Image (cartoon, rainbow, N blue to C red):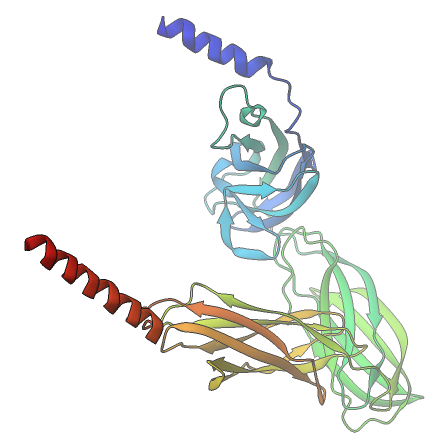
Length: 391
């Protein structure tokens, strides 16, 4: 009888229509040619939830490369993941890191990157959410014993700036080799025919297979005058010139570009506790036309009284970029606390933003005089009734 029951359950699962779950993966194929032993390679992987519900998906690798693969969320390579939650009709971008062992023999190694839906815990009795769907991306690494150092420069741009602000040269670099490449950038700056400065930078290492990785160099403009300039930029790798270009730019008077910024949110990391240090995170957007220094300052209140102040480190924020300014506070007593904070930047201040939080603990508040009177009356009545009953 048990075997029949199991068979009926299996049939029920199979015949349910897959309406709520759908999955897609891109690219469908990843190839790494000239993979070097002991090297790491990063590739982007997009996963699409095409279904009508938010769903969890497991991440795994199979085949020859199963032990070489780790999955990470884009922008966070500090901790690998084995599953991901994706809202309905949405997608996520992951980073897949391939680590080729030092003792791998030369040859071609292949496998698959597998993504499968994870049944929800409440799936039962005909629910469609316990259907399992999956998709795979084929991966192949050709391990060679040769070190290949080569790359391409796909673009060079220079942003106008103001006097006393750094001039930034942006180089887009594609590493077409199988080892980390550190291109040499040499720039000479001219006002008219006069050379007024130069720099050399080869400190940035670009991992293999990286495409359009940005390298930024900065030239100090202190002592320069507002004027039109030209920069001769030469990018070379292993002694070979990859690209040379002459680019015009302007150094403007200080104050030409707008300074604007927003304090978008103040968040508290972790659960508040008495005598436990809390991290206070202030999110600042530089919406101005030039980089700015930014610092968060805040005041902590309890029962209307100032308890403490919070100050973050001062950070430099590129134009149109967001940073998290971090400060710390340790509550010493339970109760509701209020933080009033702002960001100071380029001589300006954002509007004050408030956030409140509750620190648990302590004893219940004492009852009011009226409550005390009622308690005493009830106690007295109880005593009188008890005495009458005994009589």
